[in-house]
Length: 124
Image 1: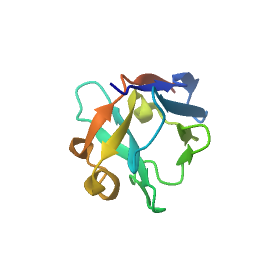
Image 2: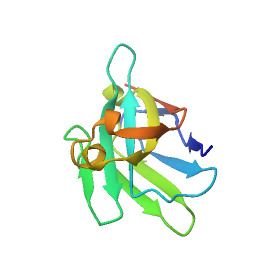
Image 3: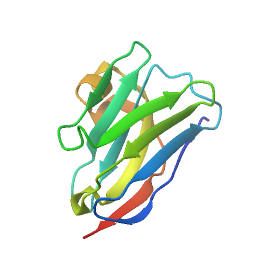
């Protein structure tokens, strides 16, 4: 079974940057992929997603600060996170095998392949 593995999380001060990476155990053949996060006591929320047709979507909360990209040659999905805020603290997940709602609506329920997450902690 294909597995997704996230990396790149850590602890940073507010205003700092991190780059998350997501790799697959058998490469990426997925049309739609995205990044999501879940903070303690909160629902999982969509942050950014893309498809193979050039569509990219961002949540308003991260627009202008986060950038999603995919290296097709290396089969790596990235999330560059700049200007991090304490409210960005959460467990960050990579997801794949999403339907169109997973991209256009950043709907977590629209993706059915998930990594285990990588923790991001932003201190003030």
